Image (cartoon, rainbow, N blue to C red; front, side, top):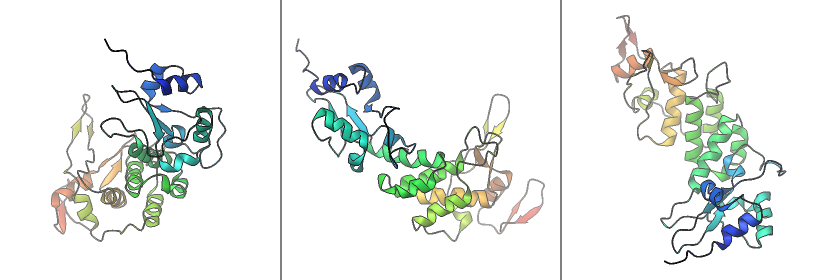
Length: 263
C-alpha cells in the first residue's frame, strides 16, 4: 500500500497557526482573517472576500495542497501580506483551482457584491468595484430588491429603488423603454401554497441577463407588479398577475371584473 505524500504546506499552515488542524483546513477550504486582526479601510468592509481572502485546495492524489488568492488585487490585503511573511513565499494571485479547474474566485466576486448591498454599503461597493464584476453587482441589486433584512420593520428590501437606480446609473446601464416587456420576459406567475393554505407568488426570472433582471425588479416595484409580503420577500402582486396575463394588450381585466388600462 502506497504511503500518501507528506502534506508539507498543510503542516506548515497548522504549525503557523492558520488552522487548528488539517481536518478543519480541508473543511474550510480557506484561511480566514482572525477577528482580532486589525484591518484598515477598505479591507474592514463586511465582505466575505475580504474576510476569507485565501483559498486552500486540499491534496488530491498526486496533486499537492495549494493556496491562492480569491482575487489578484487581494495581494494588497494586510492579512495576505502577513501570511506571506510567515510562510516565506508569495501566494499565487490566480487562485488555487482543483484538478478540474474549479476555483472559488468567481463566487467570491459575488460575495463581495451581495454582502455589501445587504449591509447597506452600496456606495462602498461602488468604491471597490474592481474586486467584483458588473454582472455580480447588478445581480446583487436585484437580490437587494427581492429580499429584506429580518430585523427591518419596513420589510421593503435591502436597497431602495433610488439606491438601485443610482447603482445602475453608475455602470451606464441603459434603461429599457418598454418597462412591461422586461417584466413579461420573466417566467409566468405561479402560486406556491404552504401547508396552512397561505399563498406565495414567487418571482422566477428565468434565464435573463443580470441587467434585465435588475431593471425588471426596479420596474416591477415602481409600477406595482410586485409587492413585499409581511416577511419582506418580494412577490407578484394581484395587479402584476393580471397585467402579465393581459400580455401586450392596452387593457387588462382586474379581479373585480372591471377593465383597466395597462399604463
